[in-house]
Image (cartoon, rainbow, N blue to C red; front, side, top):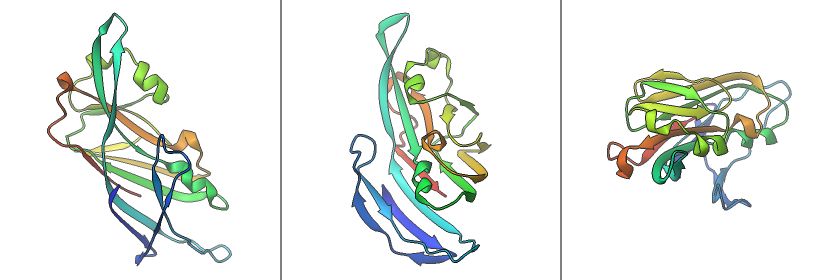
Length: 177
């Protein structure tokens, strides 16, 4: 993760980087303590850039054909440590290309087993997450109110890389919540 910045009620706050217990998916976390008085509403905002992840899968009709995927994610379930529900969450993801469509996919395992990747055109993405996103050019905006996040709330966005050469020369996604 790069360029991580955090604010509480519009004021910049420092974060502490701590190593994750799960090195497979996340190497470390930016952590801060936010105090809430009884019935108080606070606005917490984080922005950052991250390298895009990816993987490879083969197509069912020809195991010798490999499809390369780019992937970016936001771990919404980290908010489960908060007492009570999140009143409103907005996660904005800026991808390095214009998005023509965003369709749901049920989970990461399904994403890599999905047999339709060869039919996905440039600009089309598959996603999972806590809400259906709104599309605006190269941006997806996920919004949900009054919920307690869990693993199924995590956002994952996938798209194929044509010929395994990369997608429009960009390898960064930018997010904010």
